[in-house]
Amino acid sequence: MTLAGASCRTYTVCIAWQGLGCGEMSYIVEGQAESVVHDKAKHTAAKMKLLIIDDRETVRQALEARLRHAPEFDIVGSAGSSEEGVRVALALAPDVVLLEIKMADGRGLDTCRRITQSDSHPVVIILTSYVDEAERQAAFQAGASSYVLKDIDSQRLIRAIKAAHVNYCRV
Image (cartoon, rainbow, N blue to C red; front, side, top):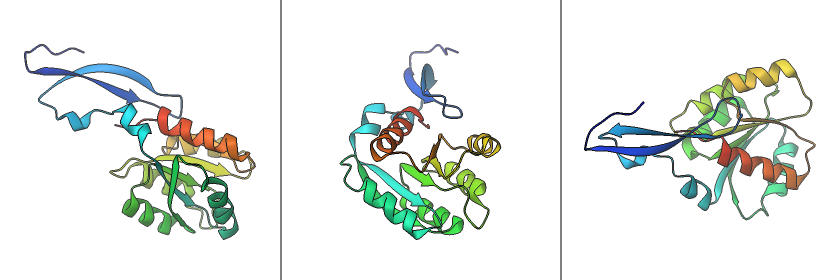
């Protein structure tokens, strides 16, 4: 849709649904502030802030050890429960959240939904031990951008995080 008028500006917006990738769409908005625009170059220039949410401390520690040497990431925190994960995500506004959806408290999907609907709109990547197709679909409906098995090697995990961060844009 195009609006006519001398004061209109053209913006490019990234849109994604269920991790299908980021498509660009131009639209014109009258009187909108430039901060509304998603700037992909700016989005990828700074270190990505990562938050890890998993109820097993050994898994959190292993993920931190695997990712702390990647220069593009800054691990800003970790949490061992759904409630703590939501609280930390709201406080730290990470760019990417690595979330175990099968936590003992059974609230992984709710955690995903609450985090993705927060004001900072972080990208949520589900990290899980085994594939469950119904769970995968529910995770995407709850706002997850990716569903990855925990046995992924470090380099592929890094690429998956970077791809989700760049391709699953939120406005």
